[in-house]
Length: 43
Image: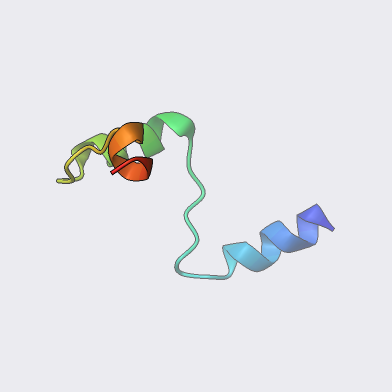
């Protein structure tokens, strides 16, 4: 079932299969202000 799900997801143009390192690099390059845990949940 997992194999079928992954094959289905690969057909989508929006699916991005990547490594943790590539995801971390992408996230760090985004121009987004950081939010602390406290600011997210205890305003």
